[in-house]
Image (cartoon, rainbow, N blue to C red; front, side, top):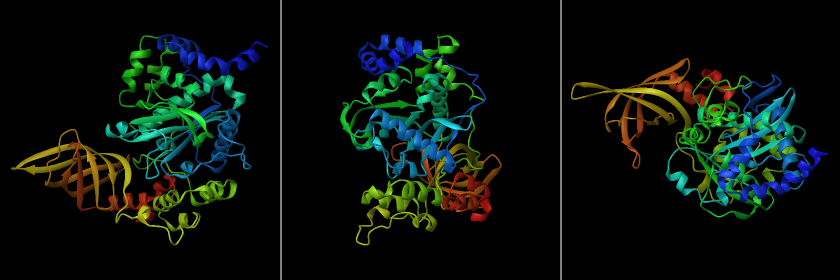
Length: 431
């Protein structure tokens, strides 16, 4: 009886909590959380990769959104949006045994952007530099919500680790219902955007929404300030920044790529043409962007055709496609007879060049040798020229490849032709 009363009262308690002073609200939330570093073996946190895992995530999301009034029931029983089809979106899950019981998606900014930028101004976040990802599509199976302490916090820890260690993300943004914003502010140190809440957000069936932002570069400091002196079971600083839980399964990677695409042409056709009508409602610009993102024949065969009279401005192709990576390296050159060496990180590459970040400014116009660690067992040694430094950040530089090697050709060939992150393991066949 008490549990039933609490469940019925929860919708009313949320708005009341959000009206409390920040200190009181934080105290109320902190009493409810408990960090568990030892979870039952049946709980597994991983990237959704198979058709069965993705379907379970989309079904769970559909049911949760229908329950909350964020969407009308779909005949498919799934919620799969065009953003789920992108190679820059990762859907994470929690599995209890054979059952998917929770999911959340990270939608990294791409040519198509992400949902909340339709209604919120994030120009100030972009100006700060670094990749942005939207936290979206969070859902927990209603039968496991009473165990959310064993599911929600570990799932959010996995999301935080994935964003910072694998997804090369500097900023998380989120659009949430006003009754939930207190949790993200109090527990996860998100800060509300200056823009006022939106009364009608089409992406969630016209529900109101509040925008918020977390700078992942300063998040550890914020966590330490808020939680550093609390006991272990309440210390989210140690919890989020410490070692991964044994229940976490990380994607297997040959190369240091920063996205984990899983959508093959068959999966795209299954989820967005056959099971749902997600592609049938695409706007022309979205359709053309999809064609430019999936610029391979196998994918184009499952995408809706672009009308013959459509303007082609959104489908301009670069001579050499660019890819997001995070590869450590070293550049060596001679200046006035003195050998100088610079440590760097490659964060964007193509067949003919790459962009890097270096703590020390690279000498523009200089030529030399670069050694790049492409993966744990793959290295490339090439002759390069520093073409120019970034106009706003002089620690960013564009380098031209003057003489590549086989390792680089395999690397870029695989990035351009592989359908999923698993395909990258067989890089030789893409040369």
